[in-house]
Image (tube, rainbow, N blue to C red):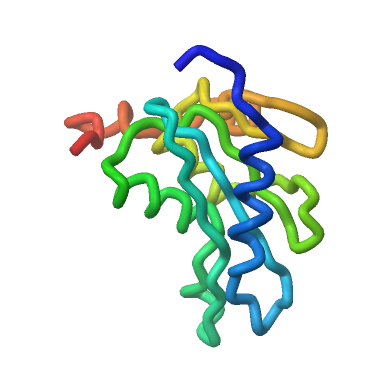
Length: 135
């Protein structure tokens, strides 16, 4: 896939799924949507838990949707908060996105479009492990 991502469509998908977030503790709803290399759009929302350490970020849901839907590579991703504004994924979530999109994956940030290489320089990934982590 070589076309520019439709950021408005992805942002709209992220806003839609954000409304389904389960955030009874923080009240901070997050939605994420990603474009897959085969043209699919995958999405996820945050799911909090009383045991805070097992809370799932929206990006976790997005990656789960990607894998459950047959896999592929993420081409572009956007995350939004409860007001629908574009936000940055945390470091942990950037690592999740790197695993499934790599350096060329685009992320819409509050400051514009950036590659994952820009946002996670010198990233650790599947190529650092024997077997490459695929499969």
